[in-house]
Image (cartoon, rainbow, N blue to C red; front, side, top):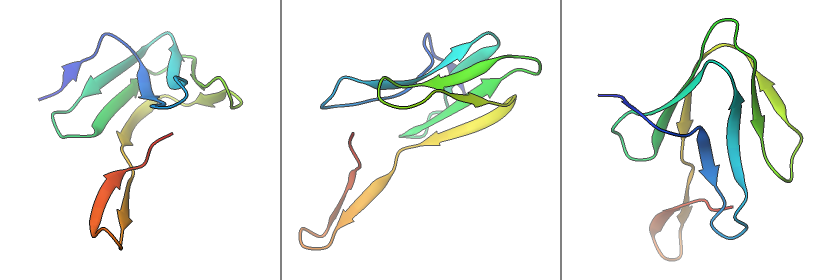
Length: 85
């Protein structure tokens, strides 16, 4: 079941404090109940942009987007972990 979140932050840097956020009208972010997965909705006709303090802004088209956390595998430790910024 989707839960509407009170923000549009896609990811926060654990070390830098920077974040990737979607700004604009007609934008909603949902937690879909699966660990590490968020759903972004940009309504038709909306003006939305992904922003970050260290990158260029990126406009995004209307539609639905999945935000999945990236995992990396350490073969020496034989474990996986979330990739961090």
